[in-house]
Amino acid sequence: MTVSSEVLIDHIYEAAVIPEMWPSVLAELVRVGEGQGALLFTTVGSEFRYVTSPGFEAGIAEYVAGGWPARTDRPARLFAREHAGFLTDFDVYTAAEMEAEPVFRDFLRPRGLGWGVASAIAVPSGDRLIFNVEREFARGPVPGEIVARLDALRPHLARAATMSARLRLQTVRVAAQVLDVVDIPAAILGRQSQILAINAGCAAFLGSTIREAHRLTLSNPEADRLLERALEGLATERRTSTRSIPIPATDERGPVILHLLPIRRAAADLFNAASAIAIFTPVAQGAAPDLTVLSGLFDLTVAEARVAREIALCRTVEDIALRTGVATSTVRTQLRSVLSKTGTNRQAELVGLLAGTTPRDWRTS
Image (cartoon, rainbow, N blue to C red; front, side, top):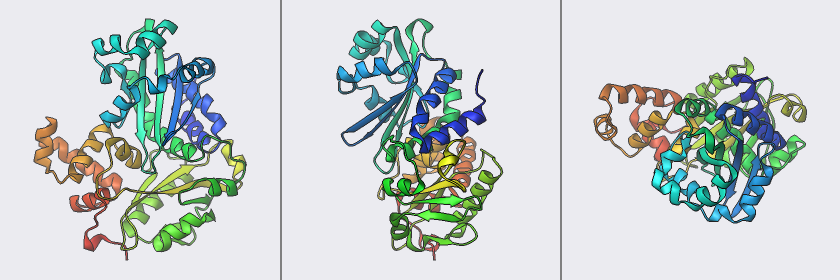
């Protein structure tokens, strides 16, 4: 029996706060990716953790025990591509490089594996995440239609795994523990979108950014409009509503992204009367985020993330069209979508949000 995409998305958000659910989510990624096994790697500095799909644990334990994470440049190549989606091994290696790479030659292929598809996610808080589906070598390279199916799940995987990474993939049993363990500003919202609980970091860091009302309300009008739409989407079970909200910089702090993680299925048992967890992630100032961060923050497609990045580097639409080899009209269409998803109205506002420099007339009051 297969799981529908909507049910799978619920499972993903369930795993955000019940990390022992990740193996079952990864099992579904194996099905979607038509693979042999799946993994989620998380690293923060030198700390390294992983979880696998059922039946894949022994092989990965052997992989780790053999020191292979430090003996392969597979993760480094993924992050270097700054790709806001899944990549196959052929996307980051040539055929000759794969033949010479020890992890393929000496570890994967002797075990009947050797074709992978993975997505690297860089989170502004410093976490680095990789979702990886490994395919049997006899089945051949991962086809494009599988990559497209996985790409559709990536924004949800990125948000949920970010939360789990902050929880260090450990089980959390009560809401208060969540707010104590997560060392970034966070709040738990009720079924009417009101604030049920808030950690000290959220109150101290955001200050006047939020205000308690009938629902969580942001002081910036444009950000609050996007938040209202997202909260309505959660209440009506719409999965297409924006769930990452950009909050412009103020004189007191830099730009922030609000992520809404819906509480689904079994997770609801741990958070009585709660509907979502709101986490607030600071955006590093002085440089535009990389493509994977842009995609994860704003649910941008690969092409949209690339346009956003180029705009943040102060390149014109014409420059972007020339650099990417697409029509100017296509770039303009992609830019309109980026502006809509980021809640901005002008290119200058977008540059201000992404680079941490806010135009004077765009600051919150």
